[in-house]
Image (tube, rainbow, N blue to C red; front, side, top):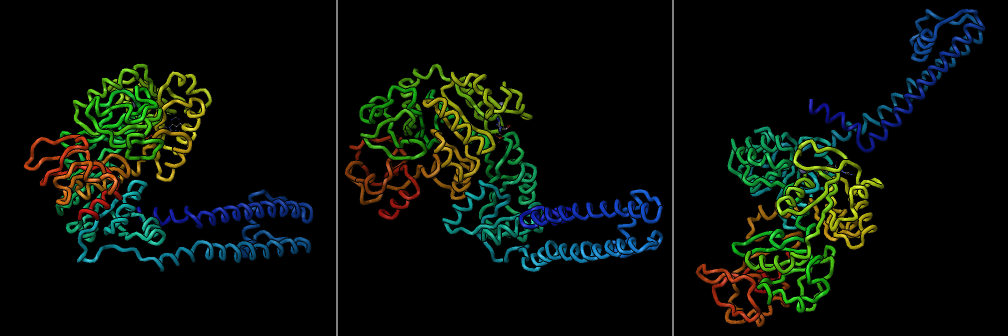
Amino acid sequence: MKTLASELAYFLRGRARQNLKVLILYGIFLLTMILVYATLFRFLMWHLEGREFSLIAGIYWVITVMTTLGFGDITFQSDPGYVFAAMVTISGVVFLLIILPFGLVSLFLAPWIEQRLRYHPTYELPPQTRGHILIFGIDPITRAFIQKLQARDLLFVVVTADYEQALHLEEQEGFKVVYGAATDARVLTGLRVAAARYVVANLSDPENTNICLTIRSLCQTPIAALVDDPEHAELLRLAGATQVIPLTRILGRYLATRGTTRGALAHILDSFGTLQIAEIPVHGTPFVGQTLKEAQIRQKTGLSVIGLWERGTFTIPSGDSILGEHALVMFAGTRAQLGVLEKLAGEAAEDELIFILGHGRIGCAAATFLDRRPVPYILVDHHESPTCQEHVVVIGDATGRYTLKNAGIDRASGVIVTTNDDSTNIFLTLNSRHLHPHIRIVARANREENVEQLYAAGADFVVSNASVGASILINLLEQKASAFLTEGVAVFRRPLPTALAGKTIEQSRLRPLTGCSIVALEPPGGGETLVSPPPETRLQAGMTLLLIGGPEQEARFDEIYG
Ligand code: AMP
Ligand code: ZN
């Protein structure tokens, strides 16, 4: 049944869909012709031969004549009648018996047969295949993940039960594809799942559960499952998933974290033992407009500033970097130090009010996160949520002229734009920026290619579903001793290169040479981690460095220090 449906689906896509439109138009043309002939038939019969026929009889007569069946039960008895009947027969032969079958064959049947003959899907992998990554379910997240796999030259295989998709992915995009149902044990055996390095399950929650159970009946290959509804995480774990990724909740937290100015502790992105990595927006703090040197954050709190985001661009700052109104500062330090910062920066943000546009799963997760702070917010969505009964929602189209105004957007200090449609998100971002030049806007990009447009529309920060999802997957796959901060920035661990032993951090010239910064030092023999060490700290043999940097900086470190 599924195969039949996917075969029929062929006619609803691409070129075939266009051709189907031509066929429908042609059908309308034939129908009109039959009706016109039937009317003419009745008129001629009545005026030439004095006989009366119903419209149904007329249609019946036209069809039998056009298809050249000619039963002979209704015939003309006059010359003009014969001429008319001959004309109908000839047009039937031309339009019905020649053009129609020819069109059907050349527009539908021939391309379909040609495709079947040309493309032979792969049903199983060679028995010696090992170390491959199996991907079930293609969407922007797994596509972004695939890009990362390609950059690392890792072998991956996409599995799909959709013939058209298999054809497209293999022929247009050049992926290795296996065609088959993910939950069929024979298919999984053919995928050499026992020898695979990792499985990524990115279908619906029930399908992912089924995949996990089937794989667990065969082998112990690690499985990362993306879960739509965080409530299903436990079930997936029971079914055998090694890692369950509640992406909607993670994305909601990211949006909320970046949308509010209140509290540095609310903004912890990741932790590394005692080392916490946190981020606060400069807006609403006493640091607005100051340089990093003037702000004296390290002196006052002990935290080190490890990064600066300004409209989506991440830099590792110097003392002269200015803390702009719309910037986000990334810190490394202990919880206690973050607490000090919170006291220092938190007071200015008392009158905060956040608008969340879109109360889908991600918007709901963001609201839940703000509830915990607590930060006041207003949710807007054009539907009641079928899954959430906890939140009060203003019902209305956020793009409507008065919806946001009536809901009180003038009082808002920040907006979280999180609908499932990127054009809507771009529109809402542009509109909010236009009306409120100083409001804080955090937007979600459902598709990677819209990140730039959202920044161009005026977002202070864009969270891309695809790159967050893909980065989480790649970190799991590589079992990285690195905390994922955001696209292109990570904290990673390295033993102290022998060449640097005995030097101070300043003398090591690590930052100018590699672009990485030291965020913490772990002493030899597992003593207490020295978080955000000052530049005059002396590096000792046997220490472990915790560094922050992008993939290029990480590669440069490895290149220089081997
Ligand atoms: P999700 O992808 O689960 O986060 O859902 C996105 C949410 O955005 C859905 O609940 C949609 O109803 C909502 N949404 C989409 N477009 C609009 C709009 N123009 N105004 C308000 N809400 C919207
Ligand atoms: Zn909710």
